[in-house]
Length: 409
Image 1 (tube, helix red, strand yellow):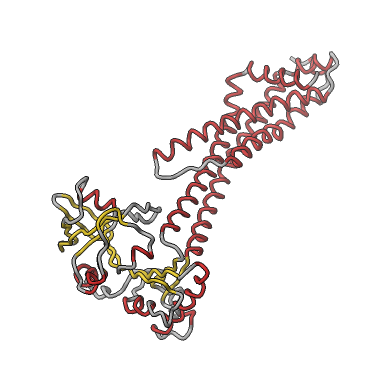
Image 2 (tube, rainbow, N blue to C red):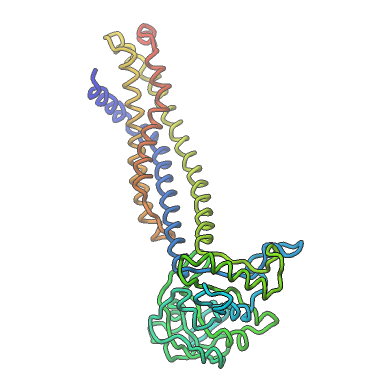
């Protein structure tokens, strides 16, 4: 019997037991679909994180309040109030920080806003005129506030597109008035969309002069502190120098002699990206492990069904051996049947995975990026599972004695 006849015989045996074959491949099908979607979700999330981090700005350094260690107490990053506008002004010194091109301090609170009959709650960001350039944001309409607005504590606001839509609908918000926490602000402009990450929606915010925010909106004992200071290095080659200059300058202004006791943390885009990538990879490995368990269960299902098939076809095997079929031919036939089941499960899993990749983004906000390498690899793995878990049933069939097989009931 040649390979074509063996393939035809194996396919015929599978077709003659359609329901059982379909149920057998379900385990592999689900496992392959899970692998494809897991890898796709991981790559989609990675692309989204990369885009969000790149959207933060170029050549960016972020100074956050809070120390990794303060005395015997470990502080939470971003939870302290150790940065002020004085620090931001000091970092603008071309003498002490020549590789820092621009500085944008931000102080942020979430507040209620009203305009006409609409109300909305969103973050209010107090900052300076450098914000647009440092954060790589653009205006869709209107203008940003000026330096005189900052120095005079003028009540002027620039809205994110989501905030503008929720407050003004389809009307033009520029020139209109929005009340933030009861204080009237004139809307001078609307920013373009910058997207959102899992934790931050950059489109849903109102940006106001930092002095206005601190003195007319925030209040309290911490009103003079800032949430973060964004620094733009002169170019990508001076990021390290800008980091060192900012670190030394802030240690000096905070009168800290031991760098390990710093009450602030400076991060770069690459470190943020590295952290986000590490988290994504951990989740992907975890989900891939779960998918691998599904494949293992599917493989065991193939072996179980093949053993049942061998038991049911003992007399057929005995008759074929009596007519001259060698153990190798019998073994090949059952291996082919197991391989067909594996490939069928793999192809079905690919189809289900592609369908899931189209449906998931419609239902959730998660992007799915189908990987060709992962898809081809999944089909190969599925075929391999069929072969591996078909070896034992095929060997058992090949070892049957033709006389004992023909005598069996």
